[in-house]
Amino acid sequence: MKFLVLNRTPLSGRRFPKWIGGAHEAVLLTDEVAVSADPKTRSEQLAGYTHVEILPDFHFNPLVELHALELHRKMDFNRVIALSEFDILRAARLRELMGLPGQNVHSAVAFRDKLRMKELLDGAGVPVAPYAPVSHLDDLLGFVEEHGYPIVVKPRRGGGSMGVHVLRDRDDLTSLLAAHRDLGTDDGAQLLAEKYIEHELFHVDGVITDGRPLLMWPSTQGDTSCLDIMRGRALHSCLLDADDPLLEPLREITRRALAALPVPGTFMFHAEVFRDAGGRLVFNEVASRMGGGMIEHVLQLGFGITLPEVYVRSLAAHDVPLIPGVPEQIAGLSLFPPRPGTLLEIPDTCTVPGISTYHRHAKAGAVLKPAQVSVEKIGSVLATGDTRAEVEASLAEALDWFERSTVIRANGEQAG
Image 1 (cartoon, rainbow, N blue to C red):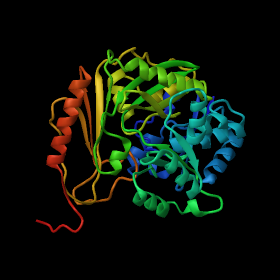
Image 2: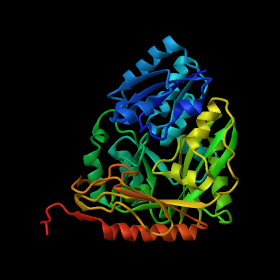
Image 3: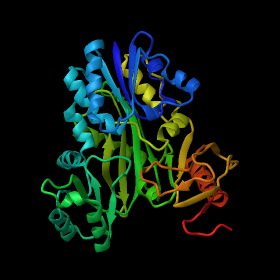
Image 4: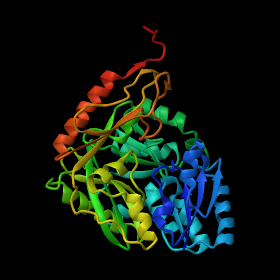
């Protein structure tokens, strides 16, 4: 078989030719920012592909699809692989144009369009927060009048928490209107409003192959959320213990949500579930791709598998690694976001007990801005332990260590 791989993220760790196997051919169509500038690393990243095309402008560029169709006429692909949230619909359109199996446009829209997703979930009786489409100001005002503040307003086809606003009063409403002038156009905006829920956030990650779930395991983000990164607060996540009383309820609500959607036969998923102040589980949303923000690495530590590898090997009809029924160890992550200012000091190593990996993602002297997406970071850690309590204690200690060891001079502040 011949596989077309659409890629926009760093190719390090994405060993598509090996996962697909030597009996098949892999063709790569990638964003140039995903390929290393170092010649040796670049050569290693591109090894094993039958053909490679590197494009300088990948994001939402229709020429990418034109290139893909031209390649298909020459090479006659059997499969299209795309792992990024922003390539889900693009890949689905190409499959339909090429007449190939896999996630189609009907399925992709249900996962990418949050309004369509909510309608399907709500119609199947899956508990969700009150919601409504927002095209113009009157839609927004009507939703506020019905539900009151606070509310959440987000793009219907966004990703990475980009463009998500929590409105708590009229000042927040005014700020949203300034940011979304499309609310005043004849065509209107493509936004969704939801009632804000005070919550603990869980995510459930896994993979389904040929309709059979191989992995479905929840993690908790505790009192942190993806929006915290944008506010300069650290985000953490930790796998649940095997005896956690919420384990099965979280898996059950995820199964119900997936059953309500037009799912492909083989896919990865990343679901988000709230537990409100009364302890009720409320489904937020689900994506048909791997979770971001180092969740992949947490699953590697916990289960000993690389989820995208399992997915790609399944598409290539290879045997997949055996996935244990419970984590071999509990693992978690913490992301340390930027704050506006100049980064004066940042540590190179971390000696906090329980921390298995520390990465510095910025250098001293860097001028920092607030995070624009929910996975943006200047430092990160992965932790392991026997229990969730052990891992969360290590993550808390690592956060305290990082904040004490990192110096950011705020804008306008005089150097000492």
